[in-house]
Image: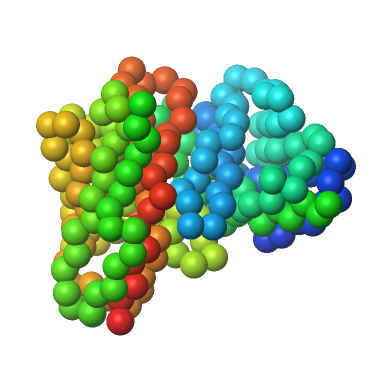
Length: 114
Length: 114
């Protein structure tokens, strides 16, 4: 039973446009959510996070939105760049992120076309 | 500041053998977690070590074991290897103090069991 779901295995976007990656979760005890980016042959790289007490967090081109009632979060990338092409993982934790285990979705492969 | 490093990068083992994977945590980080990423899946939590003791474990059998050393580096040991153990094994380290901070991942060890 997957607690964190990324239902879109892939997404293709034109350079300069917005990329929206979605993530759903089932466990209402999750209190911290993170997005990681992964290139082939590299480990996941932290992108942005959000605590359950917030509904939005922004860092440069990246914004994460959290809708607790719907148990849904999304990552917006504006504007998208070819270098953003990677697999994006949504992860959740119920121990404040660093001290507990992270539960990952299966990932969404983003392709940004020039 | 050095990042998380893992060794070896690639490894081929025969079913039934034992394997040891190594991880050096990022400078100043005292918590190390191990994840298994099968093909097409997100990383799955194996266990976490904090101050040389296991501090949480995922749904993995006892033949998966680990160690953390006084310098916070860590080992993952897998006994009686099975074909399904073929995966990318990721190590992640986190800084002390708890709270909502991200985990930093190494590049991973690709294990193939034949």
